[in-house]
Image (tube, rainbow, N blue to C red):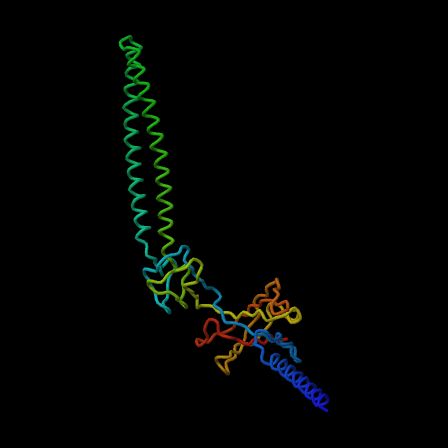
Length: 296
């Protein structure tokens, strides 16, 4: 009797575990994040649906080319900037000191070249005089040899001074280039849409500190289209854009570009498509989510 009761309990526990496993699997598949679900299918009316992100057509993501401590921030988020306008400067006293030292060395080397050139001219003049006297028999061979030796020495000193100028100029160019890298300048005109740094913070090499957007033209990009969906889409197709953040807003658009290369994402091959809106709404912002319906 005891054995039978024990076997019944085991069977009940086994059934419970199976039920729990089934419920867990159902919960996992229903509760997966949106990015792991399959791409929206082609609808019965021929529309190809996808999700996209709002992007400016032209934008810049800026990083410091060298590491350092932020000394100055010259703009704020929302500011309009022009090409070449300084945005961030690192603490750069050391770099400035190196430029000053290199400039001084270049000046000293240039002065040495000028002095060597004057000395060479004087030596050549004396050599010519001694040669004339020697031709007339009025100068000793020793004096002529001394003049020649002095001329050769002056020429060697001039050559050495000229080479030193080139070395010092190269050092100055390198120092000036390093100083220039401590200042981040706008590569394009636009609005500062993102500024993620404060004075006194460390600016790591390669970290995006500033994003600038040209707000004159926008697009929606999607990488949601699988190889099955993309076969139904071509450049120039009409589309309709709606936006999660602005209910009721619809903007007609066209497919501008389809990237020829497909990338493996979420277990499928997907293609990036750029959609050009035919109008715009000032409420829309960079990185907003858009729903795309590409029309047949």
